[in-house]
Amino acid sequence: MGDSLALILALVFVELHGPTGQVLEINPAEVSSLREPLDESVGRHHWGRGTHCVVVMANGGFNAVAEDCATVLKKLEQVK
Image 1 (spheres, one colour):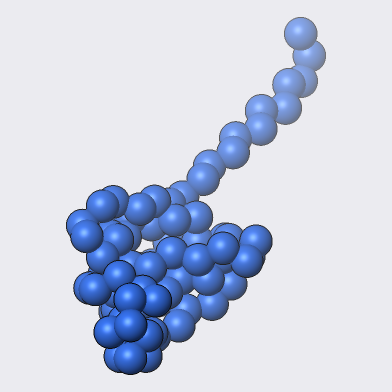
Image 2 (image 1 turned 180 degrees about the horizontal axis):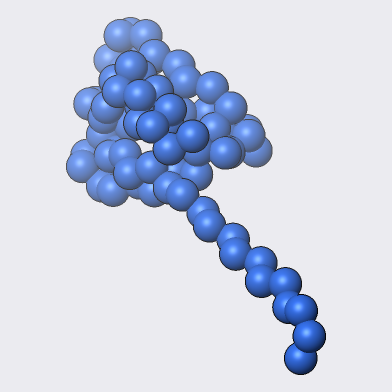
């Protein structure tokens, strides 16, 4: 058994919370952008009540979260 190469893959996730309190584990490498929802879009139920930030993913999907975008950005930067 000569030299062996060990490949270690580590995925780091950031814990966020949905507008109704559910836990979301987000892969920071897949985050494309953050958007603050307009008050009227929450009022018209486009986003659930309690949504303070929308996390747009690289695949075009999105996650509405209870944390404000400044907090989300801070959590994303802490894992880089």
